[in-house]
Each structure stands twice: as structure tokens, then as C-alpha cells.
Length: 106
Image (cartoon, rainbow, N blue to C red):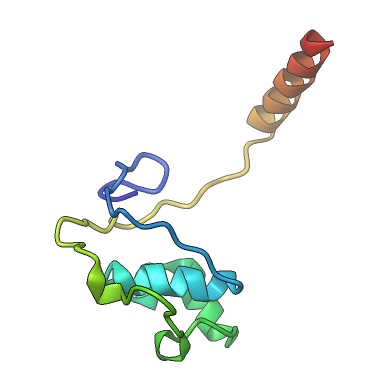
């Protein structure tokens, strides 16, 4: 998602299907491809701080396409993200809806 992501973002037509044995490496590869830095991506910043394998782009092996093979010229990184707050009322409402949906299926 770009522009106003991730929750209100717009899909970005990258044309990429990616898979990896290491999910941190996969995220790092995609963040690098999009031209992002750890300072822009809290998850990546934490992975680097914890020194998780795959969090450093130079350690990633690309068996097929290299990040430079994709055109990301139109990608616009989202601005500052606002924190998500836990809302007990919303949580309870969601659980009740799930329960009612399951009961209706029976």
C-alpha cells in the first residue's frame, strides 16, 4: 500500500510475487526494493536493532530477480503513522459479531 497506507492506503501495482524461508529477509528485500530505510519502517528498525538474520540488505541472496528489476518510480511512501490504540469496546463488539456469525452458520 502506498500514499496513505497501510490501513487507508492505495494498492501499488508492483507486479511482484515473493516468497522466502526467512520472513525478515523477505520484508527487508521489499523495503529495499521500495527505496525505504529502517528509519521509515518501525518493524524493520526493530529487526535491525535486534540483529535478526535477514534484516541487513547486503546479506540477502536473490535467486531470481534483483530488486533493481522492478519499476517503483510511482511509489509514494506513507507519511508519519499514527499509533493504533486498543479499544476494549471495539474488541468486544468484534468478538460478539464473530460469535453470531458462527452461530448463524450452524
